[in-house]
Image (cartoon, rainbow, N blue to C red; front, side, top):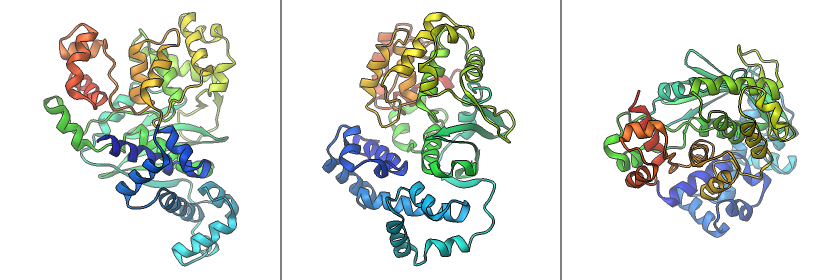
Length: 386
């Protein structure tokens, strides 16, 4: 994917997430470090419509689903879908669907226990490999895997609930608890990022060449950037299994309990606010050095954009400026929380083994051949060791 393609994909993700309901196009463009004119041109080139038209289509599709599948009132549907007024919502809805929101509501069946949406992916796609990666890193109480279904608790903009993700032949089925209806688009885009569904594997395979032994391998993302960063810090200098146990204790100690029908889900992962007000000693008491507890508190207090649309290089430098976060941790966070396709955690023990290169600088020099897909190269190299 070239720079234009990546910008278009990121912009689409943000628009799908409801960004243009919260800000104007110039503000969105500034988050990508481009002008609104350039962003408009890229979107029109890639999708054949203007950013506003793209956002409007997303809002109407979401509104139709919420009318059919939830008990939200008309005004709640309008707000959840990103419309500024109920009148505008009714007008555009009737123009698009030749029927009123009330008519759609009357035609629905009993609202289901879940909001269900299929999320397509580009083949090849190895869901089992991605699920296996997540399996070893599950945060007890927050995440669970039942057979081939990934489950987790969710808290977004004051709405709490849970989700399940399971595979089909050419898509993933996402089930969302009705309690999350008001943040439906944000849940969808976060799941797409977690399972790397925006990825087009063809140009990646072409660039990586012979190290691609499993063409369906993807880079696991993150449902929440702060959660991912904390998990990375907790995992410093200990085993993957040890880090998972520590993350579960952290969630139970600082997160909020939730009553959930999905077995194994008991807590919401701690928010930035929960952690920023904690003492380093409280965190280190879970079983880690005090300095690591302090690193987590400072991370929570820092004004960092741990989201896929953030400019990765400045964020990597900001992360490394936090005592206790080195290049490996910063690169790993960029790889998963920022969705940065060109992160490379040089010095990683697994990469040293896979490349038979011991010096980090030599590893970085060797990995230049895989730019701008070094995150995917990293996954393929790790996978070669299993």
